[in-house]
Length: 192
Image 1 (cartoon, rainbow, N blue to C red):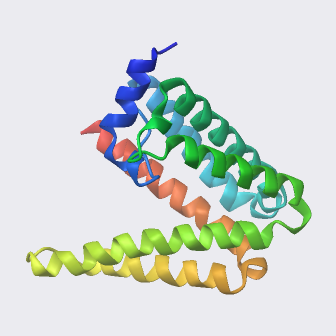
Image 2 (cartoon, rainbow, N blue to C red):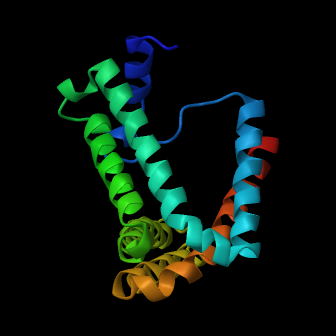
């Protein structure tokens, strides 16, 4: 088990923990490869078993959010991270835990909550891609793919917000494609 100082160091060194988004800590190469292959396999499952994944989505998503929230809370309390105004580890953990419990408790009508959360996350990702697409031509870099990605992410985000019940099931299929692409890119980057 890591000491308070080691965990606090991980939180403090990670600038994205201040914005609420954080990259996972570095893991061993074998564990990383196993995780990437699990990601790819889950992506394939989303493509092949879209209907079954969709029916189980409130339990998968709600359970994972609750576990992530608990992990963030424990790490935040252990490191006393909450004593710094710049970090949000404990606070985000509380929100994740609460959202996970809400999804689990209202699993029969969770589409609107899941769609809204996915929609907002999609808009945030789309905004980041749009920012990169706007930045690139100003610095004489390629921008077409980033621009296309931003348009797709923004459109999907708005669709999820406008009609979550009708689009969440389709988004499971798209999530599968995204997980496979992310896993494949990660494998390629690690092999360099």
